[in-house]
Image 1: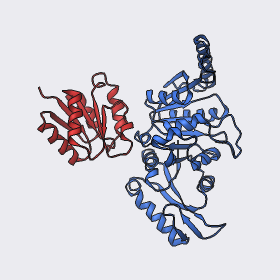
Image 2: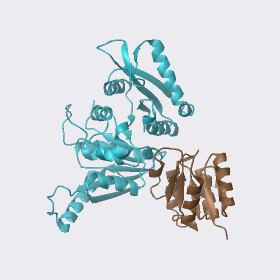
Image 3: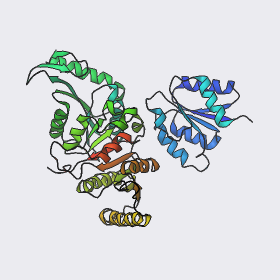
Image 4: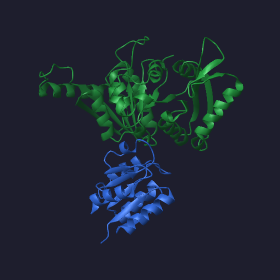
Length: 117
Length: 304
């Protein structure tokens, strides 16, 4: 069964790019444009990994992560922060990685592979 | 809670993270925000020739130039201002800390929001003895709480739901308790009361016994109960802890552990308010290192 990745980002271009990238590399992908929708989708889909933007329309990424880490079923889901904001690597201290925008696709795939394959 | 914020800014990317927090508070809690910028320092006395702090150029100050700078600030914060209902922009000339304190006396904001010093961020921060002198001087003399965001990572939280009050049991800490407790109660936050027991004041290889440390922890816990919890009435959304260690490290760790959105603490508590005093090093280090905004409160806050 394909491993599933949840993409949380409010930029449709980034969502499209990541969806294609993950699907082309043998993963299943689903996406949400807000923290609230992302959390609901995470509860429903139980993804193997989440990519998280920091600046979302309804809530900041760290607050989403706080909610995620207090959910018994989801708390150990690896999270990769992908954000254009400076200081992003310190925003979610328990994230498995933090990438700037634009990011290197090979580096992202390598991190994904290390964490869920 | 807050009705009026004074956001003191250089209107450069050094203040972007402070702007995120200031505008977020203004939008989320419908607070009026005064964006205040000191545009230059007079070349001499009351001269109208000033050195623009952003460009470094000498310019003749007139209404046109003021309007031009205001418009630049308006453009710089455009995407944040367009989502904010109540805002104003003001500019002044003079020494930044004096002008910020002057406008604060005039406008009587409930809180001043500032970024940390640009030179005190990143890897340099841990080597710096004090934060930016403007912030330091404002925080020392302001009659209202001063909220500082030094690290970009401290600006990604949005809203307050976990407030940490760190106390050293001083008089200024009592004021910090009043501010933080009112805020926590008003916004229905989890309120975390914390004391860090300083065990660093011992000679090398001459540590206290564990019995002594635990006795001190017990004593501090009792003090937290009698000093603060006794004032909280029916409010039950609180936790209370005493950790031993290096105070600023423990406060930063505790705030991280509790997913704090805000740390409130007193500074400079053992010194008088003369010009030579600096912010207490514990508050200073917490401001530099915290992963969330920090409100620092001096002993004159709340006094007329």
